[in-house]
Amino acid sequence: MQAMSSARHVACYQRWIAGQEAGLGDLEAALANAAAGHATDAELRAAVERCIRGYAEYVTSRRTLAREDGAALLAPPWCTSFENSVLWLGGCRPSLTIRLLYSLSGEGLEEHIEEFISSARGALGDARGMGLLGITARQLELVNDLHRRTLRDENALSDRLATLQEDIADRPLLPIVRERAMAAAAALGSGARDGLGAGCFVLARPAGVVDPEVDAAIGSYKAGLGRLLEEADELRLSTARTLATEILTPRQAVETLVAAKQLHLAVRDWSHRRGHVLAQPARPPLASPAQSSDRANP
Image 1: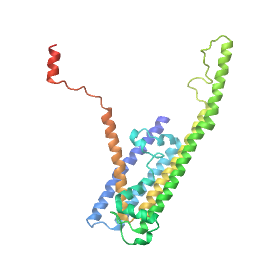
Image 2: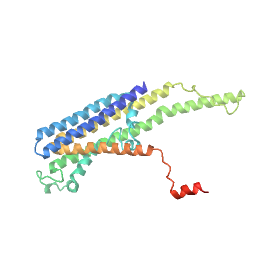
Image 3: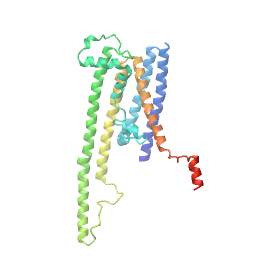
Image 4: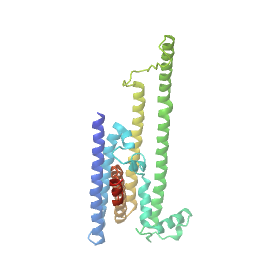
């Protein structure tokens, strides 16, 4: 059963990667057509909507898998160790898309954010575009508000994950472990009195037998992880959707989504290539002619 579940997790991920690659091609084609003057805002908007729809379908698929085994999605074995090291609750941080927008827009946008923080918005014109993407003052204000809300929600989910991890050790498992240890110690003491020897250790349950209490505690923990992953996925989706469909223009949205997909696929490709290189057996160094001669004539 576990093998079948794992296969379904991997298949879902592989479909997602294939969708990322196809979606990137779709967005890049739309962007090229726009640059050549062959694509309207409506066509760019349609490309953005296709991208968001694909993301929503992936979130729906993961929801079912998270309810089956949330732990498998938290640090997926089908990803490299490097990929897992940058994951947040089974995926990218929702705020990363906003950070990408800041990076794409260049230093000018960062300077204007500081002006907003300093309550100097009056010096900016709402219609004047800023940075490489031409973000307006009103857009920047909306992006900044979205960023703050997203960071707040990220922190709340991170805190809940920490609490869940602390609770699994504190409440369900620790009393069970102590109870089992006390039972084993009592059995050991009884064995010593009966002449079995001090080296005898008695297990509370035979090896290989599932402990119902432990199994229930782990099941509850995995269910909690699944719920957190569902909420994290929804936050990722809602952040991307709000940014791409409610704040940015169609062209700005396409450029931002292209950068996000390029980054995701590039990190995956680089980490897999590096992992493949490290997995190769080391080749013995080639002997120089002089060394070969020395070995032949000691």
